[in-house]
Amino acid sequence: MNFALISLVVLAVVVAVGFIKKINIGFFSIGAAFLLGLAGEMSAKDISKGFSSSMFVTLVGVTFFFGMASQNGTLDLFSKKIVALVGKRTYLIPILMFALSAFISAIGPGHIAAGILMTTFAVYLAFELDINPMATALYAKLGANAGCASTLSMTGILAKNLSEPLGYTGFGTHLFLTTLLSGFVFTLILYIYYKGYKVKGDNPLKLSDIPAFNRDQKITVAAIVIMVVACIGFKLDTGLFAFVAAAVLILLGCADEKKAIKSIPWGTLMLICGVGVLVNVIDKLGGITLVSDFLSSHMNQSTAAPIMAATSGILSWVSSTTGVVMPTLYPICDNIVKTFGSNVSYVELISAVTATSFAAAISPLSTGGAIIMSSYSAAKETTTDEMNKMFKTLFLLSVMNVVINVIMAALGVFNLGHLFY
Figure 1 (cartoon, rainbow, N blue to C red):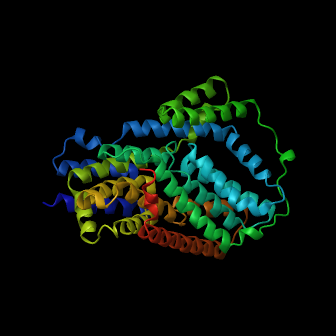
Figure 2 (cartoon, rainbow, N blue to C red):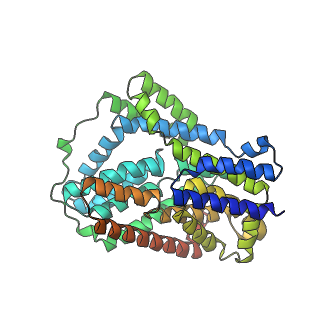
Figure 3 (cartoon, rainbow, N blue to C red):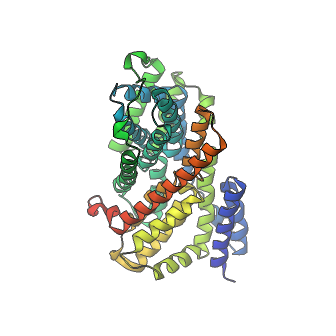
């Protein structure tokens, strides 16, 4: 019985059911992994090895800590203060939206938390300043996606946990910079397309009108700075240190513990870890090897990166980047490297995969595009025609972004001249 092929069919069914039924496929994946593993004569212990407890603890710690920073208003107030610095120079708003979102995403909250915070903020800000809300929201979401591959953020942590068992380390800076570059390139294109350099707001935010940080927020800012220095400068474990920082905030009464716990994206964490269990079973049954052999037979050392980029973009339109695309394609990248040897770089391949997958994530079929549409409709009453037009626009922009990233992969942009690995 060809369990390798069957395992891939199971994965396709799980993703399809999740897409059609709009359910969290993390739990579904664990159940499917158990049945698939039993059929393939795997023990329960071997099946459950795919659940990364260390990654789960890390992600919970980071999201819990930044949930507090969001709940006590620190991140929102910080954003308003930064935006107010541009004053009447509102043509800088698009650039600032991207940079600020990327920064907040990179220091820990990641693309989901930063995306929700900054996209919602961007839409309401745009209506207040009387500038294009669609474009402003896109700058914010692209920034959140672009900054999320830092070693402090969810995507960077996931990339590390997926790659270390395969024998790859020391690529954190490279992955972060390539994802950042990808997001910046498309943001620049949109800036020109939407004529962001001509933006003139009627009611610019004034720094004097924005309140100062209160005691709790000042302590939270200090905790964030210390965490960044400790984890990047001294290489301390990000997740565990986040728990320490969170504990300090709780003891000092700087945040509502219960609200912060509710802000942890449990569904997303289970999606990532649940699919990890299924992918582990698929790998053990030979499914990953089967896919990598198929792709390898249709590529050479020059086309490996663009083909993997295109594959990730297409898969991202119907699934999650961190939940499905990365756990599925990273092992395939490893197998491709083993096929072509030193002629193909694992770091370049996963950079192309990660960046292109996030390029597709502004689609209305994904969380990113959905956040933009929901924020817009919440801030302003919209008609069905307006929403349909927005849906079409977001999807076409997503396709364009994927195509641009595939071209970048074909040109070798994602190797960055091998400067960082």
